[in-house]
Length: 187
Image (cartoon, rainbow, N blue to C red; front, side, top):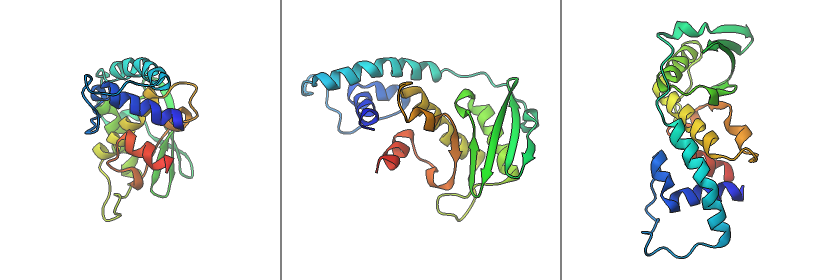
């Protein structure tokens, strides 16, 4: 848990956060920043690999789907579905107001993620965070992408990595960045 906070803090302090869309109003210019401790320097070094990975994951993945029907979404049991993407089978599990996509980190094209979310919400929509309406496929795709970013940033040795490989699309995480979601879970 501490390592996650340190890594995320190091990303912000070293400027790596800007490569993934994170900004911080508390970051100081390099010439006025206090000297980092050895532990902070180690964490910053660890983020170099994560930042490189994230930059690579930000490359536009090719769109493989032309319509939501391309995934051949099929019910396999009560609340359990399978779909095909890029020749691989994926599992989506619905529980009230939650779609869980197993191994979601393996799907990277925003356009394709949005089509998959559209197919899922055609079956069972997900409420907005205030429960007054339903989330859009684009909104759900944003949450999925935030999970993918977190997955890329976390080291393989992190216990949190296993929690980010599958996305849970739910009302509570609407509009939240991966930093917001991590902060919520650390409270």
